[in-house]
Length: 470
Ligand code: SF4
Image (cartoon, rainbow, N blue to C red; front, side, top):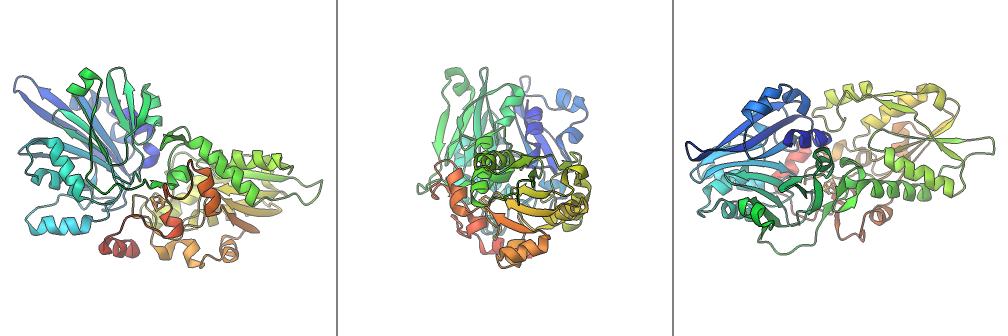
């Protein structure tokens, strides 16, 4: 089941993957953790089914797909889940997000003699738990989480329980589901659908949810809470724009629904009109992440009386990963070229609207526009279902340094960005409309730092330096 869950969540990280299981050895009266981790996609790393059948035995499991935001992408010791065996037993951890005070904590721990196995921020949590004076593993984890800051959605396996925890701001999603008598947790609900589990609720911001035999027997799970000043949540709005799958529920709402609304509001704000009765505007999406928003755009444009037609003008090869997710500029540029092609007959002589979810560096967009130009359209109008990305993310999204972001390089001058991309017009969705599209979107419940620069949680000085150096 963990394997299938990871499979459904492959879009969240494609660098490496791993599974850890907890197995009770009745003859030895002790727990053993079995694990298997490797670089690559889920289907590649677990291509030998014997790994799942013979090596990964046990009664509970956690898995993780890696997408590096801190720690080197090709360092094998950074592959999660991390596992430790210490005085209180075994502990394994899978982390989604980014800790904002990990440099300070790491330095402190190192000065007190802790040896780190990886360069990842997530390892800090394990060391803090292992050093705790508390006797119960749950309270050791709680003590560790009270010390860390930033974004974390966690799955933690102890000898006899599974812990799902979320930072008090709820930056990253984490959902709880049920399958028969068993409980499952995952970043997105599409991981429940694949195994036939039912979505129950989200793990709440600040909640440390414990799934153990008592909970399974009584049907009542135990919740502990991170000791922090109660904050309002700051869910990552970029999950709705790009990162999550449209068939998932995120922060309790359907991603499909929000994405359609983003497209609808963009059509209202920045329509592209036909020149005359003979003219027909065609709208194409940048597949796959912009497909849903494009449907919203086209349907709203037609409602407004504009004669626009949805066309499949760009074909995406599904055998290369997402582009901005790939570490290192060289591989990114190479992959853009192998990822898309145009349907030339659809585009030729037409006024073309391209709908995309976001522009980060501009590398992909520029390359796409070049490809579309080769298909000889009359004009190209670029529409983006998010505001310009001007700031790096310190909460788990791998955006580059400020200097590499196209909106920054062009001083947020839309004409200049349009010129660099080579399009006839460019329009982004406004921040107001973005917040209108998100549920309860009054601006107080979402993190919008990559657009606005308003970081809800303070960032370690070192981390800002790293981001600028990357
Ligand atoms: S900075 Fe942007 S990507 Fe990062 S958590 Fe905030 S909204 Fe999400």
